[in-house]
Image (tube, rainbow, N blue to C red; front, side, top):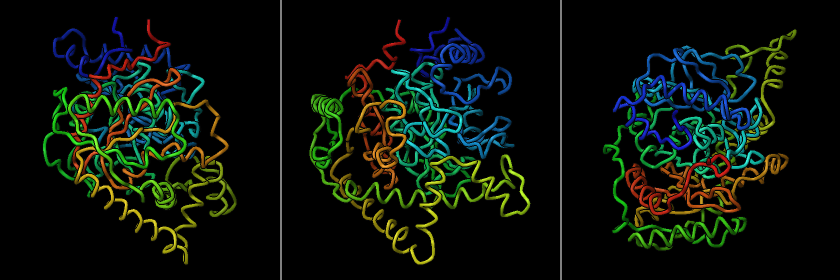
Length: 472
């Protein structure tokens, strides 16, 4: 019997290479695990049975439901895309299939990846495997919960303002948001095109690096992609000698960071010093003062443009009406949930005549300043470090009626996303019995340095990624 709770993707790959198990047997083991445990977690929106996904040969994978998969329904967690079955694969899905990786299923997501708790999914919330009464984070809570509960060895999520790093932190996983442009966005249901980025979620840093090596690289279908300047290296080193880590001084001054999260962060910083790293202080005043406001102008503006295509004519269900205008209005009213409607209205206002320069244009100017601020800090340091989330996983419904409180969940992840920089979440310990995440931010194309740093800390921390309540 295969223990999917503790099996890493690298261990599964070793079993395949030694012919101790077949890819189909691994796939079946994860489907059986999902049948046994996903009723409580709701990590998946749909599963892909044996034989539906080709012959395989590799380690199975879970894909967030914003990634188009040929022949498999893709809804982005929204009713307005219900029944939509793509006739092509997104580039990342095609690269996974080319590597022989069967798709286990499509994971739950906040509608159009808009949210920080996966409570905005039109198909119901996901639950945190560490405590099902709490959220798994968002918008990639389904992918993070699937990996945490042993329902997938690894998965792909999408990150606009923290939707890989934040749920990875709340569920005790490793998650990477790569440098913007290193992974193709072709075939992804777009939210905010200048921010969206696909990235891996797994149990270990080496698994994340391995999956990143499969999906990254130039894609002729996405003009924003680039070839990696150097090959992806699986980390081996368990020391951090010669590495300079910068801590933004605003982290120590920031209100809202829970005591347990702060204590875990301080312990991880001390551990990095013990491994040989040089730790110093840097200054990111604009990023912490204006990052979130900047994000919530740019992202909704781009979302309002991207979501205009869902009009009942080209995708998904349609509400019939006497006139075309009434049909579009009723289809969008019934198809979109509250959060997409809120962001569409915000974004449309920010882009409207007479306000463009005052809102969207001004936000883009501020974004340029944030990019320069991060660049200057990373000239002195190889890596910046902060907590990933200011809190541990919060109870379901706790922030559902307060959008601003929900937006603050991404306060620490948003600035580096605006700067297009890579970020890695590494579990750093527990607070209140729930996982705490450490965010490592790297230079542009600095993923290998992040992997080295994360791997050394991961080995030294010895975090058990299996939720305590599922251990036997």
